[in-house]
Image (cartoon, rainbow, N blue to C red):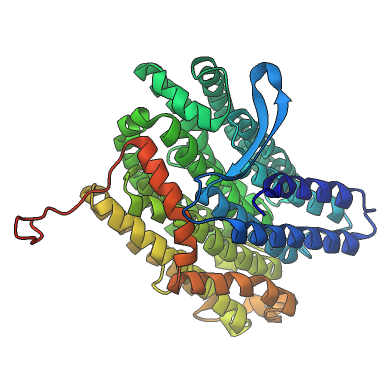
Length: 512
């Protein structure tokens, strides 16, 4: 199985599926949905097989494939996956069929084309798999840029509210970040041995002048910080998350934003270890500010989708401090947070979308007491909110705990301040739930026929796998952490970081 071209097939499958769905006539919307769902399930099955074929404790990068592409630049179609990339690929494979099923009735056929929407979702999956599977820096950059195209059209054509403004803002922010990275990619090629191969560049960048390496690092970091998004590069996300269809928003914050944190781990830390250590204090400050700032803004939001978007910015602050704490515990927690955040926030966005679709409004003030009409759906929203705020027993708690304990061992002050974000998370999540589902029933809700319809069988099929994963990984994360740990340890070795050890007295007693 090791010689099977998993990654190239996984990358190509959604693109082929997108082409097939795009050519289905607009009048056959149900067929387009079924084909898109079936295609995404094939990707999920192949991803699960690849997960089973991955050797824990084996080579850092497995399933390597390399094909000639642009010989004059030594750019190749090279694919490989370490543990970090593998868990992200499986997250993508899980979320896309869930989102496709959740989006079954999101497109109004009278004004928009369902085949076009679901083809764009599959095209987006193609770019997401490609960006995590790429082991050639130039190939990574190409996927990093083209991922903007399907999401731009999804937001601009199928979104709501100020959708065109949000789509353009999303595109411009990401494009500007991509230009910074392009400059660094060119500089890396020129100074790193005229190659784009990641493994060769890790060796070649050691010869680059320190000041030059710092500038190259900053080019990559700005691009990834915008994508993540880290404070103060975050302002595009609330607009995009608020305007995008709920399913697409779940992918935006559940998968796409992880490209930024993945890029920092894979490229910034491994290629520029000295520059990463030099910039770490500033990155930690920005991450902690993002946690508190975004949480405070979330408390004051009246739009449900914007509120969830702000919670994601706060969560990315935790991932940021986990990355730049430079400990294996914090690093593993950060990667696990990327996975768990994708599941929890994906679920929260999808359930919020169900509420919005029924009410015809995303404003918190238009709800009130909705749980009296839809008790089961309100309960799912409550669970999604608790998972988002990292309640013990849910998967995000494990990752948040690892990040904080790993950070506390080297940066006590940042860890202490970051814990304030946990308190604020409880405030904005519980207040949101109280204002939407609890309290006195808003009389206007009884006049909306859809509000009397509780969760459907299709919606149960959408939320059930995410709830199950959040509970299982909350109690038993070992299958995932075993895959992540070796890759994180290798990254820490690249950056020259060593885990702190407790002081031990001569008699073997741990000392202060």
